[in-house]
Image (cartoon, rainbow, N blue to C red; front, top):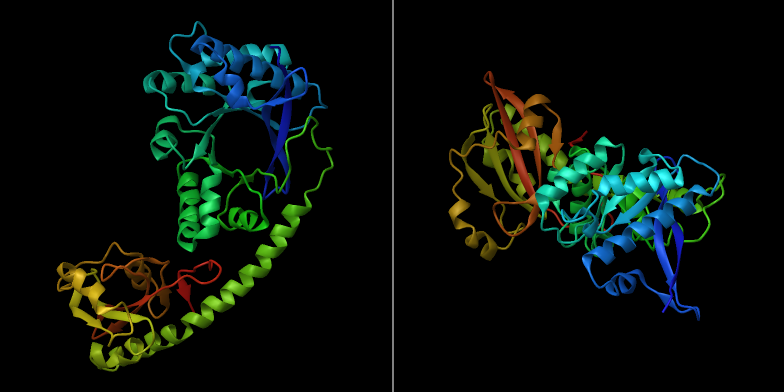
Length: 407
């Protein structure tokens, strides 16, 4: 049965630029009676790896030639490339085949972002060599479906892609869990540190668009911003959804900051008073009594200028994690002589004496709970010391933009 193939293009937007910066080419197949044939079914009909590679190359040629017919704009063309094209058994390398696609369409390699589909690839060494060749020819590389299946940080380290596409499952889970939402932000930050731009795909709802903007994602793609179509968007297209998302995030940011500061204010004030009390000669227990009496306060401790703990932990009277949880962590309870000099709350307090520092939420070593640590440095008898106080932290309704200091 003959199946007709054509290209559709889904727009990819830069959140910062607030406009289209590229299109992902998607294959559309139809039978003579007009019945659509999904791409997975098209490839499933192939009888061999050779046929699969031939179909994949034919799809790339179709997409490139279709894209090249539109008036030239400064847009990338994202081409999905099946793992079979990287097979060491092929007569031509992936870069040779894609250079041929460029010659036929008139596109330059730097206009094309090669998306490596999330598939198990056996010949990792050959894949790395072919990826280096692709980059040397000027093609950009995207690692697709990150966060699902085989795509992970190991491939980011190995292939050093220009761009990483976060799988839709990431944003779906982030919309359901504040913990996943915070981790997603950190994941994006880590990918940036690895040298990759980040695209969040599969965005279908406004809340997911907010997550993308909150997490500092570079690019977005999904039905919320634009569906695949046979035509490209007009050159002067403006995306109302992006403008509305920016406005909504601005309002939320101010609400988050206000709620965050209001929630922390009693703890900050008691930490300031603890610092003043210690400078006046009070004991740690006397100075920190007010802090430990607050709801959710867990523990206070004192560090010297090298990060060594002075004395032991002072626990609250039951406002923090339940005692059963603490008992489970009995091997970690005795912190006499422990050194915390690598912790952000120590380093920041040491360098900015008198200013209360506040960490991001992290897993405490005292229980199963998440906590944040408040710390403040002070001078007494010519010695610099740091008071630290941990409080159990439950997520706000929306993720706060945590700062490192609270004045």
